[in-house]
Length: 277
Image (cartoon, rainbow, N blue to C red; front, side, top):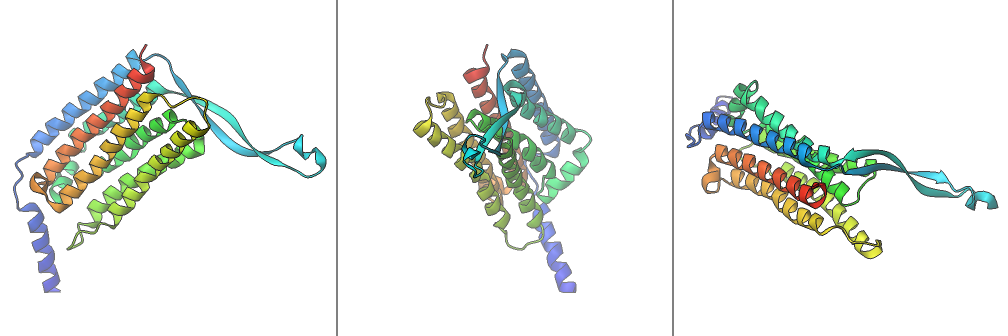
């Protein structure tokens, strides 16, 4: 029992002994600045955008009355319009989500946030990404022609699971001597599926559609895919302790930058592509 306790103490000391060049106070300032930048952009999207809506539908089986007149019931697929989504509000939503998260972290949640950072965890990050990044994926899906409510829900859920696997990665590896990559790999698998769905819709539009998906959407695919992959790369570098990423707080700051730039890139590509007056 004594030997086991000693090992645990050494491990904890190893994680917290190196002093970071990035102070917790500076990160708090970063969170406040990030809250402001996200909020200002969200407000700008709402104020500057023209009205543009996309439909949300549901698909279901129903009886084909004409084909069923022969005596055998024939079921066919049908679609029903449920409601419309204002694209500007959808885009602004993920800005406001991030703004609220950064503000909460810099104020009422600051003590817990900083205590977690010392252990190499940021729970708030993963929950915020789970909601805001998943909303971003829904926006990209709808721009791709994915309007079915069930499909949108699955895309949101898969991206949410991907981010929760990031949380599991950080929590689980507090208890391991050697880094476990299981949750990381599961998260990558969950995160790649929506992109495969987008690829199928693009192929369908090209093969069967009367028109092509707007060119700005292709730029969104490329830029957002690269940004989403960069989050995975950042975590990989953190756990491999490559260069500056040996300092967990450096990786935390990179996460903040990536989040802001990714949301900004998506929002303004959508704005100039379809929301500009």
